[in-house]
Length: 158
Image (cartoon, rainbow, N blue to C red; front, top):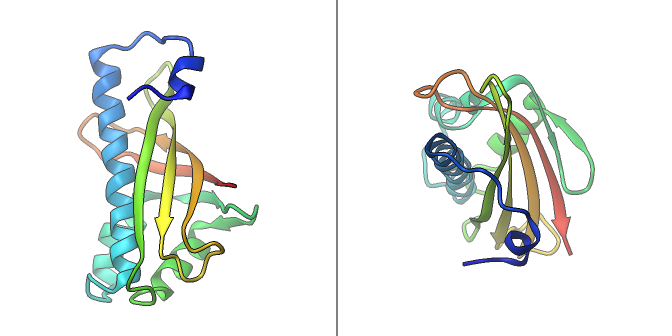
């Protein structure tokens, strides 16, 4: 499907490597958000090892998450917030839309992407059904290593 954004954005040179990276990063974003939603629904066991393996390990130690209201969270603050929410929102769901790889550094070590995150049933967010546009910066250490979240900036879509 062609969106207004696609029509307004000049075509960029896309190589097989770019498509592979874009697919890899999209899967990373979808998998991370799927875990967050499941965690809030209480589906995985409340276990620090599971949480570290499925969530915390995705992020750089100095990662910053700028929330939709503008508050910047350190990794420790983000981890504490998400961990504390285990099982607190049984009807919560997240869907990822319009994922785009925006840029990869010349040395291949960093990538920036953007996507729309649609939340439904978010009990602690107003409104409970909301959307946000997110920009994420990833560190890339190798083609077979998972990307590492370095910076995430979320902006509410009104």
